Image (cartoon, rainbow, N blue to C red; front, side, top):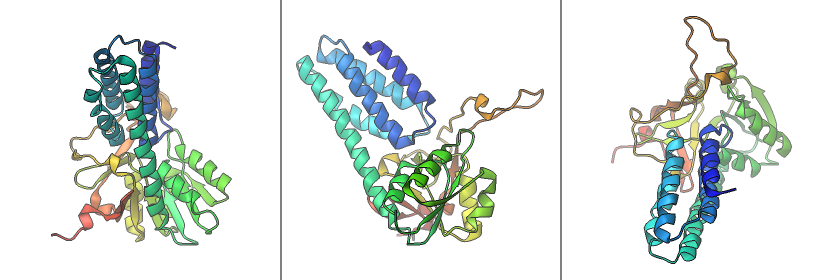
Length: 295
């Protein structure tokens, strides 16, 4: 496949992806860049750097609700000035090495964040969660044998919660799979709520799959802690009023077109910091900004 086709297919894949979490998708972007750098027929390092930079910016902007894409790709972009002026094959090798190094930093952050997340879940506890988080799944993998139970929402419209339920089934973890409408009912029977995040905003609020806010409200009313688990690559200096909440195709709703009825498929919502007990990253458990004592 030539470089132009790799670019086109890569952008389409990232823009339409509904299954991967933000971290996984960010690493997929870096893998696309690696393939593109290998295939791009550049005559000199300047042309290669320009082409790779354009693809990186396009990938970054394809999913505006996900800070991990922006931050990881910005980290990669910071390395590009160093390759300009190098012989072309050395420059190509440097681009590939840099993209792989940033991806490895992300993978290690997920491992470390999942370790801190698992430490929050005592033996015999029941965890309720919404959507699909690679960090949370990694935490569950380390909890096998500790009699932990899970309540998984289906996470409509594409039911990525079912993917998580299938993984927990393979791990032998006792799991209840519920509709999103049952969140309020089942939060009262859980010991804690744990979710991932696509972005953590400047004020400590979290952007995640729509329905996360509802789970946080239910957890608050049930008197159980609500934790957001994500690596620090997902931190953003944007405020709630500045973030773009992506809207996806309304065909995913499987609803008929009716006169005077406007279908909406907003994929993300914002959970305010006041509802978040703490944020768990690769650096440990950080008190929510709304719960920190003034210095």
